[in-house]
Image (cartoon, rainbow, N blue to C red; front, side, top):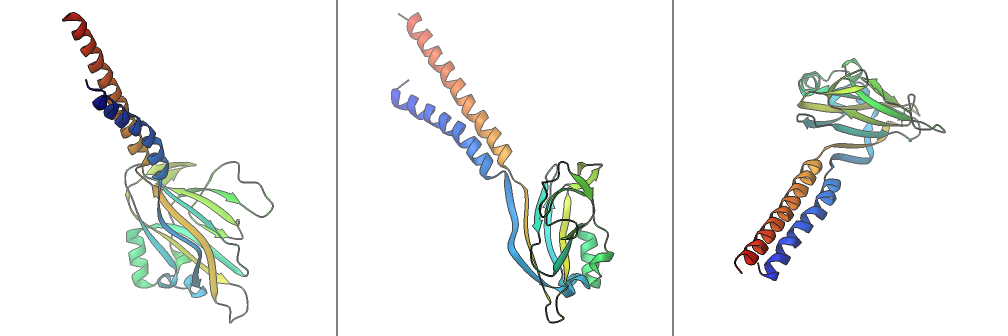
Length: 217
């Protein structure tokens, strides 16, 4: 085998082995929505059409990750996750968000002057800041205890809130980041396998060439 060809093969293999973890890390999570801050009005608490709503689609074993915080004066917000069918009906009726039942998720809580929660907890709704200043939420469709259960489908993240300041102050602010599991792990494993197989195949071919060359002498 020519040296140039050998270098190309080895180069491709090394590239796969290096790019696998890099691409895996970059595509580990895919951003769906990111707003810091997000602005809505306090009438969001009286009708779903005024509330924040973001659709997400989850496939088998895919996880939804939400980071939400509220550090703004006089405002408080509540977050829930509902099935798309429930959201569509409630939206068409402009239902009160507080009357909509949320689905089960797990979360970790952070607050002023406190250390991060040492374990995850389960809930169907969270309020900020009364329950905490920052929440890290994971959702897959359902849960049993503090363990997630995968139920693929379409869902909506909804957030609504109020402003306790003067009557003229109607703005409600909060920070939110929504992500889903990306193809990073799959691509990482694929590239590592391809890189390893190329090296093994090249080594086997090189060994075969050496044996044949010695045998034919």
